[in-house]
Amino acid sequence: MNLDEFAFLNQQLGGMLQSGIPLEGALGQLSADMRKGRLRDELRALEQDLANGTPLSQALSKRRLPRFYIQMLKMGVAGNNLPRVLNIVADYYHKANSLRSRLKTILIYPGIVLVVSLALSIALALMYGYVLEESAEALGQSGLRPGEVSPSFRLITLWYPVVLIGTVFMLFVAVWIFGGFRHWLRWHLPGFKDATISQTASGIALMIENGSTFSHSLELAREIEADSPAQKELTAWQTRLAEGHKQFRDLAVGGKLFPPLFIWLVSGSGEDWVSGFKHAAEVYYARAVYKVELMLYAVLPIAILSLGILIVTQVIPMVRIFFGAMQFLGGE
Figure 1 (cartoon, rainbow, N blue to C red):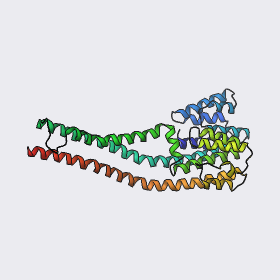
Figure 2 (figure 1 turned 180 degrees about the vertical axis):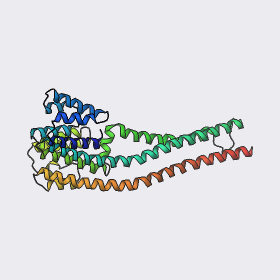
Figure 3 (figure 1 turned 180 degrees about the horizontal axis):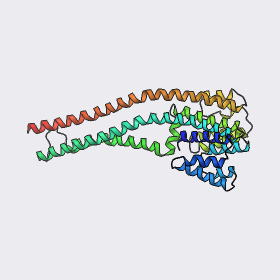
């Protein structure tokens, strides 16, 4: 889902509701101007359910929309304050999209380097492999001179960079495809981790602020982080809260994912969970933006340097093999 489009959609939807336009009518107007995709289909299905008399809370439960978004809208309906909640959600997803776009940009340059390196490695291996095979056929040798390297060994030397770079490329692709890899990386890589902590804290604060209990907010956060490293710690928070612990430092004791600074920021507000999590979300959002900007400035020159090193390390051995073959042919 395009989070920027989703944020803008909710901002428009909130404004239309404030102007007195019914929700189903607003959904119909907005979805008519959207490009084809899953989001438009879900909104049209939601509009149809509302037109048929289905209550909004029940209609939302049937849609394939983010669980946090559905929960926020349900609370907006319960509090008779849906337009305000839609604007809050729009700001939330706008910030999330801003960070996600920066983080994706960091991964683009290494991806380009890997693709170019893999293509170059294959091209060089094919070219020099062909030269070696032709030279071996021209010599018509069945044996080797003392100290001479066999053509098969030379071919292995040519193709091992392709295998190595191809393996790294497959791992890179696996990070994009498999959710388990993505969950682990976003909770451990600098910048990515700060962004995830900020988004988690912001989501919990918004849910509590709009009428959800702390326990229920933790439950939803745990469901959102299903199959991620954070699920275990969020479950522990919820268990300790049910046991009667009221201080956040007691809830988060023994955890490894959420840093001491985060625990200190949330704990500083006592039992005012909204202020504590909002403060932590703001601090970690600023940290994420700062770290991502640093990485963006560093990743391009590092990617170019890496590409240059890969080219040099592959071309030099192949050039040596090529000139060695030429000298061998000249010696004959």
